[in-house]
Length: 339
Image (cartoon, rainbow, N blue to C red; front, side):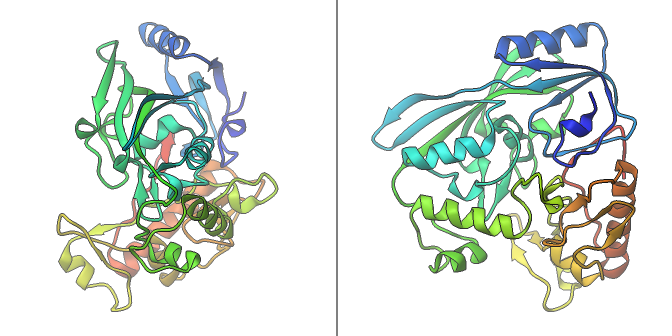
C-alpha cells in the first residue's frame, strides 16, 4: 500500500507492511513486536499531519483505528470524557456539541484523529486542546509500559507538547477531556469568528452556532476535507505562526499582525508574511501549489510529488526569510524527508 492512500496530501511512497490496529491491546502489541524486532515503525492516525517521502517507508505502518467515546464522570459542573486515539476528531467535536459539552466547538472541521491532537496541541479560532485535556494515556516505547500523563505533565505550549518533543517515544492510546455543560460555547476570543457570529470578542454564542460558523470559515479556506477539491489535498497549515521577540516583532512592517503572548513573545501571522513576501494564492508549479483559498496550505493538485511539495515549501520559507528575517517552521511531521 502507498502512503498516498493514507494521507490527506495524497502523497507518499509504499510501505513494506500495513497493520490496522482496531483495539488498544492490538495497537500496543503491534508496536511492541515491531520494536522488539528492530523494525522501522510509523504510526498513522488520520494522516492529516504527515508529509511522507516519495520513497515511502521501509518498515511497518500501523494505522490507529480504535474507536470509542466514553463518559467517565458526570457532575453538575461538567463531564469527564475519554476518547479513543483513533476516533476521528471532528466526529468527537460534533458529538460534544450535541451532548452540550462545551470547550471544543471552535475546533470543528479539523481533520485527523483524536490521538494526534495532544501531540501538536491542536488549536484554531482561539481554542486549543490543552484547555480541556485532563490526561493523555500512552504506550511508552522506551520503557515498554502504559503511562498516563496529567495535563500539567504534558508540557503543552503553542503547537507543542512532550509527545512532539519525543516523537518516537509515545504512542497515544486515548485522551481524556474535562468539558463543561452548557448551551453557550466558551467566550469567543478570535476576531474573525466573532465577526462571523455577529458578536463582540469576548462574548459567547450557542456552541452549535460556533461550530457551524467555524466549519463555514474553514470551508472558505479549503480546510475541510473534500475529495473533489484539490485545495483540501493538504496537511492543513504547513507553517506555524512565528513567535518573535519584541525586537523582532518591532522590525516588521507597521501593519503586520502582532499578538502579545503571556511569556512576553509576540505572535505574528505566517499567512500574512507569505502573502506579503509575494507568494499569492495558487502560486506553484509541478503539480503542487499554495491553495487558491489560503496561502498557508501547500496542496497537491492531483499529480504532485513530495519532492515538488518540499521544493515549494523551501521557496516560501526562504522568501519570507529574505523579506522579513523570519524563519518559518513546518507544522506537519516529515517522514523520510526534510526541509
